[in-house]
Amino acid sequence: MDAAIDAVVEIFTWVGFVVGALVAGVALIMYLLDGTWLPARGVIESTEHGRLVRWFDEDGGVNEAHLTHEQERELAGKDMADIYYRRGFRNRMRLTQGSPGVRAVARLAFGLVCVGLVALAVSGVLLFTRG
Image (cartoon, rainbow, N blue to C red; front, side):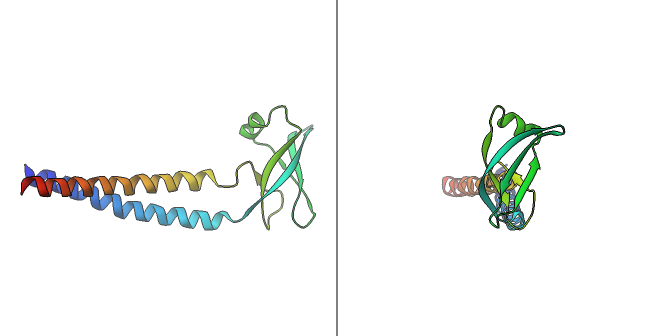
Protein backbone atom coordinates (compact mmCIF):
# COMPACT_ATOMS: atom_id res chain seq x y z
CA MET A 1 0.00 0.00 0.00
CA ASP A 2 2.86 2.36 0.83
CA ALA A 3 4.38 1.79 -2.60
CA ALA A 4 1.13 2.79 -4.32
CA ILE A 5 0.90 6.02 -2.29
CA ASP A 6 4.54 6.79 -3.04
CA ALA A 7 3.96 6.21 -6.74
CA VAL A 8 0.91 8.52 -6.83
CA VAL A 9 2.76 11.26 -4.96
CA GLU A 10 5.76 10.87 -7.28
CA ILE A 11 3.52 11.13 -10.34
CA PHE A 12 1.85 14.29 -9.02
CA THR A 13 5.26 15.79 -8.27
CA TRP A 14 6.63 15.17 -11.75
CA VAL A 15 3.43 16.10 -13.57
CA GLY A 16 3.12 19.30 -11.53
CA PHE A 17 6.66 20.43 -12.20
CA VAL A 18 7.07 19.27 -15.81
CA VAL A 19 3.64 20.22 -17.13
CA GLY A 20 3.74 23.44 -15.08
CA ALA A 21 7.06 24.39 -16.66
CA LEU A 22 5.75 23.60 -20.15
CA VAL A 23 2.60 25.65 -19.60
CA ALA A 24 4.74 28.50 -18.20
CA GLY A 25 6.78 28.36 -21.40
CA VAL A 26 3.58 28.60 -23.43
CA ALA A 27 2.51 31.60 -21.32
CA LEU A 28 5.86 33.27 -21.98
CA ILE A 29 5.54 32.74 -25.73
CA MET A 30 1.98 34.07 -25.64
CA TYR A 31 3.17 37.12 -23.69
CA LEU A 32 5.93 37.83 -26.21
CA LEU A 33 3.57 37.39 -29.18
CA ASP A 34 0.98 39.67 -27.56
CA GLY A 35 3.21 42.67 -28.22
CA THR A 36 3.26 46.11 -26.65
CA TRP A 37 0.02 47.85 -25.69
CA LEU A 38 0.11 51.58 -24.95
CA PRO A 39 -2.45 53.58 -22.96
CA ALA A 40 -4.66 56.17 -24.65
CA ARG A 41 -7.86 58.07 -23.99
CA GLY A 42 -10.58 57.05 -26.42
CA VAL A 43 -13.74 58.86 -27.45
CA ILE A 44 -16.84 56.65 -27.71
CA GLU A 45 -19.29 57.44 -30.50
CA SER A 46 -22.49 55.86 -31.73
CA THR A 47 -22.78 55.16 -35.44
CA GLU A 48 -25.30 53.37 -37.60
CA HIS A 49 -23.17 50.20 -37.31
CA GLY A 50 -22.86 50.32 -33.50
CA ARG A 51 -20.64 52.04 -31.01
CA LEU A 52 -16.97 52.61 -31.71
CA VAL A 53 -13.94 54.13 -30.04
CA ARG A 54 -11.60 56.62 -31.70
CA TRP A 55 -8.17 57.56 -30.36
CA PHE A 56 -4.83 59.06 -31.35
CA ASP A 57 -1.79 56.77 -31.41
CA GLU A 58 1.79 57.73 -30.54
CA ASP A 59 2.45 58.88 -34.13
CA GLY A 60 -0.60 61.17 -34.13
CA GLY A 61 -2.66 58.88 -36.35
CA VAL A 62 -6.39 58.50 -35.75
CA ASN A 63 -7.57 54.96 -35.06
CA GLU A 64 -11.00 53.48 -34.53
CA ALA A 65 -12.39 50.15 -33.43
CA HIS A 66 -15.91 48.84 -32.97
CA LEU A 67 -16.78 47.75 -29.44
CA THR A 68 -17.48 44.12 -28.70
CA HIS A 69 -20.59 43.23 -26.70
CA GLU A 70 -18.51 42.83 -23.52
CA GLN A 71 -16.82 46.19 -24.06
CA GLU A 72 -20.18 47.85 -24.71
CA ARG A 73 -21.51 46.51 -21.40
CA GLU A 74 -18.43 47.72 -19.54
CA LEU A 75 -18.48 51.17 -21.15
CA ALA A 76 -22.25 51.68 -21.07
CA GLY A 77 -23.16 55.34 -20.66
CA LYS A 78 -19.59 56.63 -21.06
CA ASP A 79 -18.41 59.18 -23.62
CA MET A 80 -14.69 58.55 -23.03
CA ALA A 81 -12.66 55.59 -21.83
CA ASP A 82 -9.11 54.66 -20.91
CA ILE A 83 -8.01 52.08 -23.47
CA TYR A 84 -4.86 50.29 -24.62
CA TYR A 85 -3.88 50.11 -28.28
CA ARG A 86 -1.37 47.84 -29.96
CA ARG A 87 1.85 49.54 -30.97
CA GLY A 88 2.60 49.06 -34.65
CA PHE A 89 -0.95 47.99 -35.58
CA ARG A 90 -3.83 50.20 -36.60
CA ASN A 91 -7.32 49.96 -35.13
CA ARG A 92 -6.48 47.41 -32.41
CA MET A 93 -7.60 48.19 -28.86
CA ARG A 94 -8.67 46.57 -25.63
CA LEU A 95 -9.62 47.72 -22.15
CA THR A 96 -6.82 45.97 -20.24
CA GLN A 97 -3.10 46.29 -20.74
CA GLY A 98 -2.45 42.60 -20.09
CA SER A 99 -4.02 39.85 -22.15
CA PRO A 100 -6.69 37.81 -20.35
CA GLY A 101 -5.52 34.70 -22.23
CA VAL A 102 -1.92 35.11 -21.11
CA ARG A 103 -3.10 35.72 -17.55
CA ALA A 104 -5.20 32.53 -17.57
CA VAL A 105 -2.37 30.36 -18.92
CA ALA A 106 0.09 31.85 -16.40
CA ARG A 107 -2.32 31.08 -13.55
CA LEU A 108 -2.70 27.51 -14.80
CA ALA A 109 1.10 27.13 -14.84
CA PHE A 110 1.31 28.53 -11.31
CA GLY A 111 -1.37 26.11 -10.13
CA LEU A 112 0.40 23.13 -11.66
CA VAL A 113 3.72 24.10 -10.07
CA CYS A 114 1.90 24.45 -6.73
CA VAL A 115 0.54 20.91 -7.16
CA GLY A 116 4.12 19.75 -7.71
CA LEU A 117 5.30 21.58 -4.59
CA VAL A 118 2.52 20.16 -2.43
CA ALA A 119 3.22 16.66 -3.72
CA LEU A 120 6.93 17.15 -3.00
CA ALA A 121 6.12 18.25 0.55
CA VAL A 122 3.83 15.24 1.04
CA SER A 123 6.62 13.00 -0.25
CA GLY A 124 9.04 14.50 2.28
CA VAL A 125 6.54 14.08 5.13
CA LEU A 126 5.93 10.44 4.18
CA LEU A 127 9.66 9.83 3.99
CA PHE A 128 10.29 11.08 7.53
CA THR A 129 7.17 9.63 9.15
CA ARG A 130 7.96 6.09 7.99
CA GLY A 131 11.60 6.14 9.01
